[in-house]
Image (cartoon, rainbow, N blue to C red; front, top):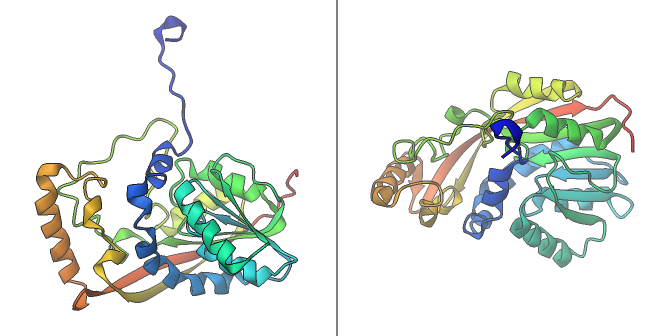
Length: 285
């Protein structure tokens, strides 16, 4: 213990998210969950509008869906750097890249809240639902901005508020999942809907040094099986106590019934925002 009996806390960047996204129980269901996120890709790509020869940073690249698309768009004279804290998802992304034979795509097992990525300054930073999990979002967005050239753009998709996304099972499980632990001093609570309020997301971007912040609100629907949003074998991983597993499964079934359109076929309403922001500062290389 430090002199004087004071306890000092070491603030580890995104420690909880690092543990979650490197747990095979969680990442093994990724390809099923991608059915939701991949349906958003065309809307995000339209706003990104990458050009041949550009250098692109993909933040929270996951299994590499957007990275692969951007690599084809920027061509051999461009480069895409995909960054994620999940080693299992990066392994999937590399396999997909190798299958396509892309030579202008690289992946980094890093945390964009604190790490420096080779290849800066980038022309574009992009993200498809990968920027809502920082426990110090202003710091993280500031680091992303510092990876951009002057005039470089940051374009990302983030979920709108939870009430706009009734597909999410979090509300159904609220009565059987213990409340999250208190956030440590100096940290924010990450989660899929933390950027759902436009004013809050905009203030984070401005505080991080971005300018010219715009957003486009989009609502679509996706048809898919129940496995798109839930894997019942992961209920304990999500915090459901052993004695509540049966009740949790019943609650999920009732939740799904409201979305059912056929045999193991459900209609998932998705509401998300696509944000655009610009770096107008000259960053040191």
